[in-house]
Length: 330
Image (cartoon, rainbow, N blue to C red):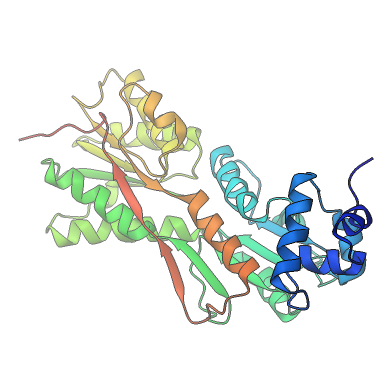
């Protein structure tokens, strides 16, 4: 049988109500008593009973983590990094409920009885209806990954446009002028931001934007493979290709190898995300590190702290990770 609040109360010579308040950091308990109770709980490896706490506090102790979709566009790495970041903050204090917004037409289950807070890993503008619904229900909401115009909702983002700009600039600095871009899924905010960064760099360095070099993908390896085949069929083929994520970059590499090209001698490829497999491709993939775990962790910290971060857009920096897939040309 596990350690109970009543047992801790007996050892501390206080009421079980005092123990409950102390473990929940209530200001009604003085610091000396609070520290004593917490020390006993730690020594006994006490694990809170979330269900019992919810009856006492009238809180659900559920945090909802909602993705736009759990389809193949949401890569396993992206999914894992998001959950890892949130879970590192909530630990054993809350239950984490993971859902996909596109699975629901009816949001009636979204209320304060079921959720103490909601984190939305938003990839699409279509999520706005869900976000507005939860916000109007007075549930604390944090939106990650996608810029939203409502300044009353906390917004934590990755600096995707800046990351794409830095990646494209790196290709240009290595002598590339014929640079193609494999775009992300249509309608995803990250796709738009990365394209903006790509175009911004070309314009900055007075490099012509060739429409033939802009090819649509959907963040899957298959789409990167198909997009690259189109680019390789162009008479004046590009010397470098910037892919909107690493999965598409891997597909692009396969298409290049099959067509008899070597990387980076014949064509340079750069990705985005810094997925764990980038170090193990041949050659190792140069990419932009996007700290999704850091974005998710920051969002969870703000949600649980109750800090007022309205009218703020919190950006987590991106970083270029240089490996072996880009060649310097003269």
